[in-house]
Image 1 (cartoon, one colour):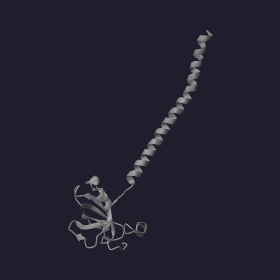
Image 2 (image 1 turned 30 degrees about the vertical axis):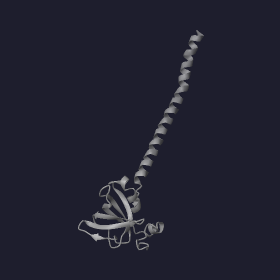
Image 3 (image 1 turned 180 degrees about the vertical axis):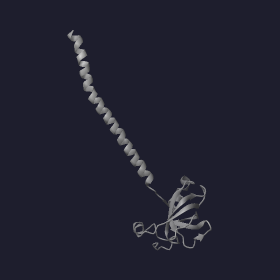
Image 4 (image 1 turned 90 degrees about the horizontal axis):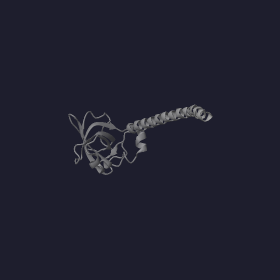
Length: 162
């Protein structure tokens, strides 16, 4: 009889010891899932909030990969290339010794002029085209930016853009 009752008493004792372990394991699993979700949200949020641009030479070098996807293109407006149109402006941007023609539809900002660094948002007209179709022009005029990137903001005349 003692042999038969001993296992019966051991079963509840074993179950009582296993319950806190199971709770700790569940709690640990919940915290791990929460931590993973937080890390995922941070990485996705930070990754999508960073907004990069390609320079003229980078865009031309990666034109086949870029195709007609929308991206930001950075360059210096070429002197003598700006032509105002009813829809916006046509001009060329240069960078790294290369040039791209830009057709912009939209109102250029007041500070838009030749020999200044700009970022234009748009896409190549076709995968093989050197024409960049833009819907937005952003003028870089901050002295802080110019001081931080002196080689990017030199105009074709060799002077630092205003």
